[in-house]
Length: 232
Image 1 (cartoon, rainbow, N blue to C red):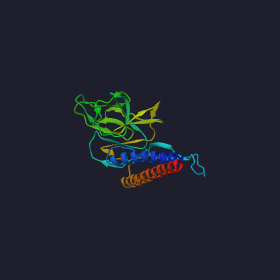
Image 2 (image 1 turned 135 degrees about the vertical axis):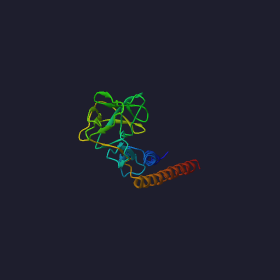
Image 3 (image 1 turned 60 degrees about the vertical axis):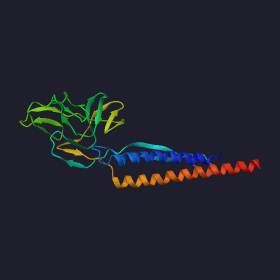
Image 4 (image 1 turned 90 degrees about the horizontal axis):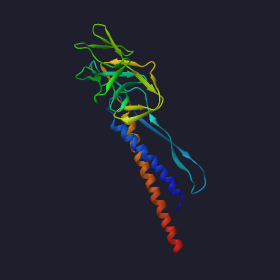
C-alpha cells in the first residue's frame, strides 16, 4: 500500500474533526452563553520526497471565551457576565461552572439553574427572602429592594476547563475568583458564534473532506493497478 494514502487519511481525519466542531457551533448560534469551539491543525514531518510520511495533526483545541452579545429581557433573576468568568453552581454532577445566567427561584426560594442546580454565593446556596425583590450590583452583590445584602455571586474561573455540554464546564484543578468581571442584571449573554463565518467554515470543511476522500480512492486504484501489473 502506498504511503501517500496515510497523508490523505490524516487530512480527512482532521477535516472530519473540523466539520464536527463547525456543525456544533452552527447548532448553538442561539444558545445562551455558548462559547464558540475552535480547532487548529499543523503539518507534521513535512518533506518534499514522494510518497512521504507528511501528515496533519491537531495543534489546538479549545473555546473562544470572548463575550457574546447582550440581550436585555428585564427578568430580575437573569444575569449576564461581561469579561472572563463563570457562575458556580452545585448539582448532581458536583461543582460546575456555567456561563448562562438564566436563573429562577425554586419552591424554597433558592436561586437555581434551569436544571435545578443551586447557584452559589460566597455564603453558600443563594436564598431569596420571602416577598423580596432583588437588585444585583456589577460586582455580583445581591441586595433586597430595601438595601439589605443577601449574598454575593461566586464568579469563578480556571486555567483548565472541560466542556460538559449545555453550556456547562468542569474545572480540572483549582478555581479562582474572576477579576474584573461585571454582572448585568435583567439580561442574558447570547452565543459568541458568528453564524456566517461558521457556515463558511462548515462548507469549506465539507469540500476538503470530499477532496481527501477522492485522494484516498485514487491511491487505492493506483495500488490495485500496480498489483495487476505485478501479477501480469
